[in-house]
Length: 292
Image (tube, rainbow, N blue to C red):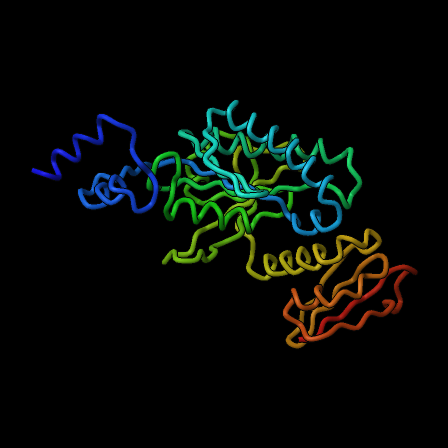
């Protein structure tokens, strides 16, 4: 009788969503915590700490400007802003098509905004989109669906978008996009790996949703090159051109002298590196070999 009257009382007044409140405990007790299927968009700034360390005021001005643009696009695509923590954004959409369209437009608009900034001051977001079941507590959403979206965002390249296989299944016949199949990826506290696809935002006219499987060796090579490039991004002279991996070393050829930062070979799980001019090649091409 007590639980029945309390439950009816919830209908007559706002729900107190604070953790530990009577309403919160009651909803868990009577099992009426709201759940729903929704499209989740997670975004954050790549290299935010570096940007803040170099110029806090300029970084905050850029972030504020970009956040206004992102919030406006979320609203235009009928999404709902959920919350933000520093440089991150969490939003939800009733339509997964709207969510992906919003993500593509965010990256397209931000690329245009960044074009007017110096290379070392550009603010690039990574975006992840997932379709999943979530728990609703007041204005907030929680659960595996959100965790997967956050993982997808962390896998995206700066200025890029990653989506889950469930998202791809819903949009593949509705949006004209190309995808790069990144294979199954593990997600913390999720038992099964999640298949991840990168949305290809550049490169010629897109055909209707083609998701080509990439061989494991090719995928590993791409990731190594991407990690190497990210750790040399301050040195605009060094551009990776090829990679050769053996059992005990990784050789990366580049135009320009690569940075000597140990972060590069640490990122590749190697002990040390040796840089030398590549024999028999044209001037200005270097080989840096990382030893495992």
